[in-house]
Length: 157
Image 1 (cartoon, rainbow, N blue to C red):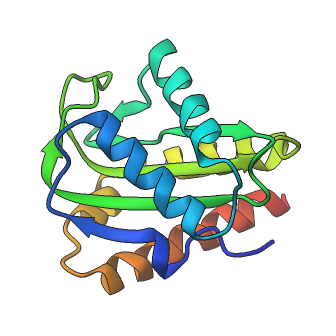
Image 2: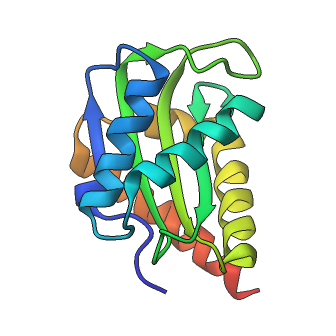
């Protein structure tokens, strides 16, 4: 399995004006990485999922995601926000870190394992706070590689 996180997909950003701007920027990052064609279609899939239910899972975390035919490999873009963003989260708190997961249509099992592993990792207060307190993209990327190791162990089970 190729790396889920890559340096070009990990950003520390001052903030976004809106949830839509955040989603659009993250889809652009993923498209630039070469993991999809037709980013507009993928963006529509992500926004459609958000309309059904926000992917703001609480505790300052959002995990927008979609599975679509336009995606050719699983990739995760991450934005750590200096200015929290209203994401209509379950706990009504703004988000400080956003993980956008792009998944090929035929990768359902891996998709579910990644979502579950990521959610379980982020529920751990100490680990989540360590991510939120990263000061550089390099530091954030190093912590994300730890998450990737956990995810890959879970997928092999």
